[in-house]
Image 1 (tube, rainbow, N blue to C red):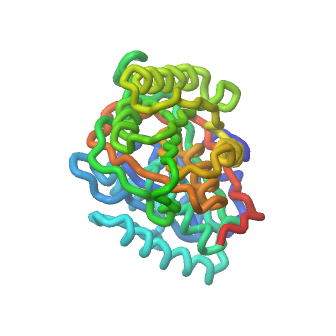
Image 2 (cartoon, rainbow, N blue to C red):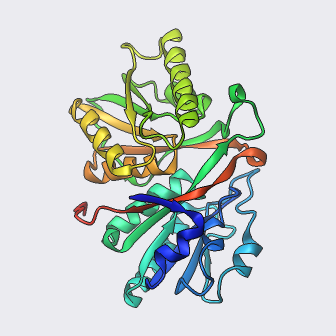
Length: 328
């Protein structure tokens, strides 16, 4: 795993035979990778749209995607309300890429957490980790239309569900242990906790040394503190919530931290709710692939801060998935 400047992305992948899979959404970073790769460099470009959500545009960059990619492009999920249909369609394309013997460059920047986790599961089931490189455009600022005390990326919850391919193994005789990987959305975390009513609660946040920016770490830690205090004040769990730190820039480190933490509670039903950045969410998916007893849930937001969600940074993180993984 390493970081480079966005304007060096073309140089990074020059000479490599690959298909570019890119999430398209309302995020301003949606086309950063496309704009920094030569149009003819990917042998194929596949745009992936998050399922239709009320009040949220599937993408603000449909026309730009068409104009900046060559005619071999594909667009998956347009007007689809079904994550299952999107994954099924993507699986067809991925199997074609295997026939063509192309590597996969997966830009996760503008995928929803739910779709991201489902795609990681799909790549594992197709035994394609060794052929896949993940890229993620960093953010220079989140919630840039608010002050520091009012930052938000999304609000409310319309639905909570297990993510496709990650149902876990829930036994009625065991205690429910909910693990919140906190981000900048304490109200969503509080709602998840209230709905699940766990017997045990763990609250994680990004460590100082493994955060993208120090400012992000400070904000994240404050949101995690708010969640902790809310749980204590409202007596939502019998015991004081456990706290831990994870990495926001290395998914393998996050996976190891989660596995070690979960192994301390072998008799618990485990549900992870990943509310931090996409890189740490990959760590949660890798942990659940290693331990299929883990369920990963997705808390569908009611509203996004579309007008001030994020400002793009000038770097891209490049991640190679673990080639020795043996999940299936």
